[in-house]
Length: 540
Image 1: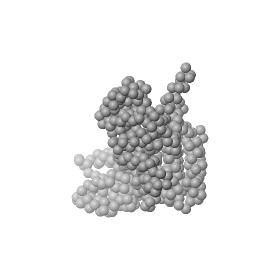
Image 2: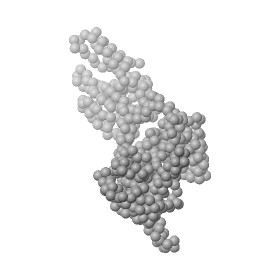
Image 3: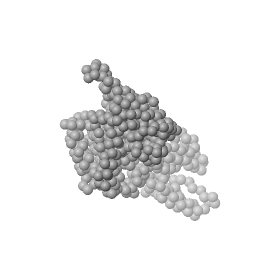
Image 4: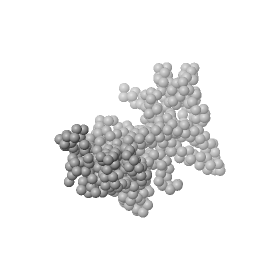
């Protein structure tokens, strides 16, 4: 077996500057050490492209031993990912005596694809004719993978920002449509033939509102009600309803991990993650199969982080959802979390299911990866950071739209969208409230200072020109300490919180909301504070 020095001594002409054979031997030894210890792949071929020397780096990366490679051409590494035109250009370049530089996708002995930056130069004999070629390949597979992940992350962030902006504008339009539909429905008799038409408008508005919520979720900007959660409890509860969702021909297997840590997340959002992944798995198994849901503790160490550099090392709780379905083709894997991207037939889905999952996981400071091959099913692995036990739980109360409470208090309504403000004023007047209104923060200050009576509640949009809702509430707090505040906004949570300290759990309502939801939230804010004062007075 030749080393590079022996090969060069027998096959390639080496002439020292002073003709000294001693210096030639020294040069060959240096050449041998450099080639044999190089991290780059070094290959020497004859003029026909037949390999006569390969270094250890070639053997390590390609999986071909020196004996297997020598006597064959570089075509043993050719992959279908590489266009034949590239090789035609390469041969034309090097046969003309020029240096070829290019990026080549090759195939290892085990079938894996790798990518190299290749430089090929020619070696000439004493007569000036080309006798050999020297190819140097620098492996850039890992660099391209990391660049691809970074590019994908940036693209998803950009799409998320766009989705959040569109959702805000769309939410205000939906508010107007749904509010006037509700007002119209309340004015129609039970047997009126137009009630069916109005109900269709309200149903379409709710569906559109669901889409905007999913867009906000994808953009990691949905309002969250965070709690300390045990994923095993969530999985156990939701697995009771999953069989009806996935069908009788799909077997559900639940494998709960032992002593798994808690995670800090919104329980309804985690349920949505599991439901969406289950539906996705069901659609991938039209003829039946097995759906497996697993939980486990997972410590991501430096070895894992080396492969996923965007993931911080630490303790996580892993949720894995696997199916035995059709699998996902490689060309789709990079796009499956993008909104409106779907491989289903027309009418088979909106393309927001996995986008919503992605948004929820990212908003919860987690990570999601998919592993799949065509015909071999798919596994979605969700990693959520383990939460400290001392984090206090945040409880939320879910109100049904069946109740329709009114009142007699005075409310200052501050809303810069005239159509939204007008419909809300009409509705609240119908339900007994005394309404003062303003189109922006500055006007609200003037109205509040000129009104001599008590203002029980101010309902204000957060983001407004001239003076935002948070600053408005702060200025009026000293003048009207008894006045409660309810913030509303169609913007994302991160945008809302940038405008000031706002309790997004008890003092916030996300647009679009129904008028009935507004009525319930008003009573919750007013009555909760009064109840708290009453309890405090009794205990004193």
